[in-house]
Image (cartoon, rainbow, N blue to C red; front, side, top):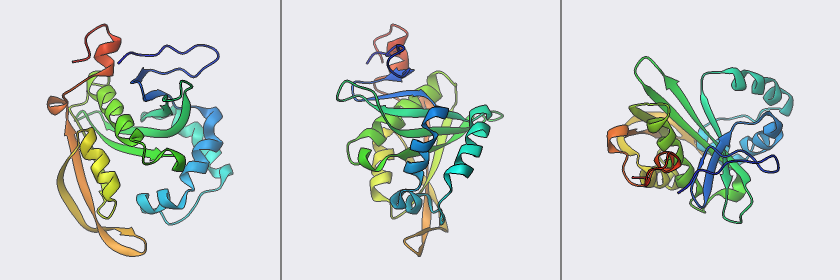
Length: 199
């Protein structure tokens, strides 16, 4: 795994693997992000009931760019050209060095392993750059594909919030998962970028 240095003709990638990369959150992609966020499958997965207008999303973008949250644009790299396919976000609590994790993938990017790859890269950054000790998330219990992707990336189930969410109009539990820095093993794109062997 090597870090890819962006040029003027391609997006900046901060860390990457052969298939996936993370770069800065970009104001020029607000309409693309908004399109992904209005996908019905994403709304069901987040448990959100209503879409948002592009105007409201554009207004919110300036606030997001100034905020303390750590946001990445996810790029697919398999065809040699970095193509934006999603966003990952860390919502940090600096007082205890933890963060909540959120991911959004474009409909066309799902089912290709990019969610797992982007999640693993975000954890790598969280533990080796942001120096967090734990990252956690909530996922609706019926979202089996999401749970499996998080587990492959290094998250473990630690509990459930009973009847805390909705899935296709039905009340459901939210599964709580976490990942600890001390348990993050395997290749590291951050270490590889610093000239290490990635382990």
